[in-house]
Amino acid sequence: MKTSKIISDLVRDNIKGIKPYSSARDEYKDVATTEMIFLDANENPFENGVNRYPDPQQNSVKDLLATIKNVSKENILLGNGSDEVLDLIFRAFCEPNKDNIITLPPTYGMYNVLANINAIENREVLLDENFQPKVSQILKTADNNSKILFLCSPNNPTGNSFTVPAVKELLIKFKGLVVLDEAYIDFSEEESWLQSLQKYPNLIVTQTLSKAYGLAGIRLGICYASIEIINILNTIKPPYNVNELTQQRAISRLKKMDEIDNEISQLKSERDRLKKELECCVDFIEKVYPSDGNFLLIKVDNATKRYNQLIELGVVIRNRTTQPLCENCLRISVGVCEENQKLLRALKSLV
Ligand SMILES: *Cc1c(COP(=O)(O)O)cnc(C)c1O
Image 1 (spheres, rainbow, N blue to C red):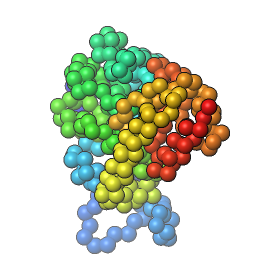
Image 2 (cartoon, rainbow, N blue to C red; image 1 turned 135 degrees about the vertical axis):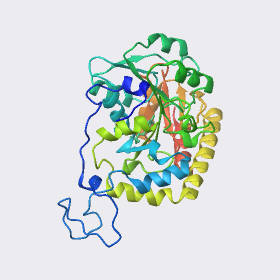
Image 3 (cartoon, rainbow, N blue to C red; image 1 turned 120 degrees about the vertical axis):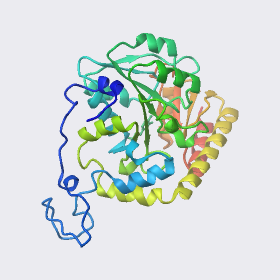
């Protein structure tokens, strides 16, 4: 495996030079001009639409994503949700009981869960009072075993994006990999960091079809990175990690970008309308934070009380009060117009 110095220094010793499982469909090279028959994978040959193993490299999905996102196909790896992608990154680069990662709470809970599962220390550096990264403190916290810095932008649950200078400085000065989780980028006016992959060899951008693309049920997460990093992750991924039904649904959805764009713009205008209504007309709401995502973080008088009251009225939101910097905060996903109306009516009825 050819890897540039910086990446090969970061990868775990046991992963270097590992030989991936070679599946039947990996070994078969598409060279024939006549019709082929496939007697290589011990499948049941009676056709039912999914009797064959799926494409281990998900070529058709990647072709569409490459065009839509204006990146090269070789810079893409797909997983069974972002969760699998993130787990692959841990397993490729973090040595259990030795290496550490840096996360910036309050943020997405999965980074910490994956760190625990993989026996990796999670060094937490809280965001500042504006929910921005404390760059110099992050750099002071890092040591030679700090393999990954997780930046979630727009951040869940705070909703804001991190400033360009802060991210740039971290990309330049942090010695490990920087994973930029852009799960909510399609709702944001800020630019994606995807076009900076060439410039920063330690950058990994993750996105997902679970949010703006409306396909949480099929589990499809996306990793964009240098070819070196993608090659390493490819050697350790389960061969058929994205199933045939998922690939089919992703393909048909990605061919209808106009539909997706239309839903995104509706959700953004609903978000902005909801924000105004919450600010003006619900007296126990102290603050509605700005959001680049499809959710709003609000500060209330008593988060747990309001959360329970809403459940009684059939409205389920997320209580974030135990998260650092989020005392008495609730996170509300933006619904369709009628759902948001029902939420507002419920909130206004509370005493
Ligand atoms: C929802 C979310 C994801 C998506 O995870 P999937 O496994 O792809 O569904 C990733 N990161 C963040 C910050 C999220 O909020």
